[in-house]
Length: 195
Image (cartoon, rainbow, N blue to C red; front, side, top):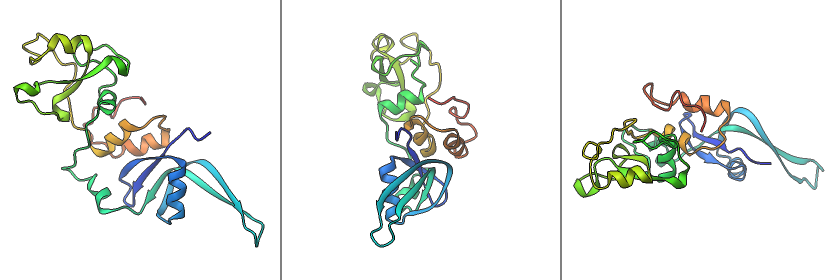
């Protein structure tokens, strides 16, 4: 019934995270929701008021702007780097092996360091790509050039808005439009269909 998540933003509209309906209700209860936009997703019915006999109803939209903390506002700053994890990396690379170009299930992919860690490469967004296990084993402890491989796409560090998109599942059209407005103009994710 509650299959869609709600996009939470700060007061300025900077995307922060995806929340379930329970967390959205909590934000309303704590009076942290400043405004809502997007389409109506859910009507959550509460208890009955003993004095009036009226039942409480809370309408939850697909996007809610909340009073944020200083930490939340830092996520939109130019120097912010989102945490690196495999599920988000694989979504950044569209479930493709960045060497052979074939699409794979998550269980068939691995994180490959373009410049191997043993050769001074860092475990950072700009140095990692999704690779099928076959290509990753073939590459081994070499650079792509040394292994005779060519990258299908150049790795990049997602902005926080892109990171929020990459973490989303079942993103609604109004949420996607909202998120894309926060992507850099040169974002490789701008023209991508929903994942």
